[in-house]
Image (cartoon, rainbow, N blue to C red):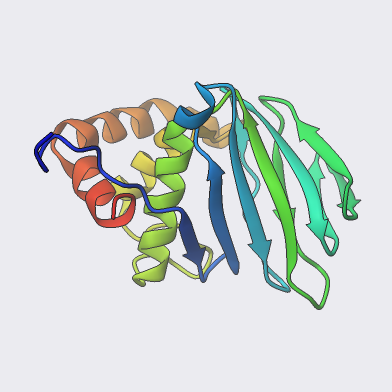
Length: 189
């Protein structure tokens, strides 16, 4: 097999200074034949992400070290090591760390979702390169739309009206090579 035919190696560890976390891909969707994707998340004190919704998969958080907070259905749940919570599709949620120490949890997506893995790589790469705002959103609206579509992160409520525009912009970014360029820089070694 020539070097041009060999599969590209994927990066496994991503750091997001805005969310104050580190994500490590433990099992890709491809490695589990699409059954699940599994990651480990280290969240620094004060870290967390904004509220969002997924439609294509459930998301299970399992605390490994420290106490991780998960907000869903307008209710905060605090998970201690060994405890889990599964967020079904279409459920607004986010994670957070209100403690004074870094917490570690596993996050399992069922079924697996390669787009989520790619979107995390791009979002965290942009944040690490200073191309995201203080809240972690990419400064480029095109990049934001692409990440939203890749990760199956959907706006809900009144903001949901923007989803057709976001999907159109993301599809254009896929067609014009923007996605490929970002994956080359942030997802593949």
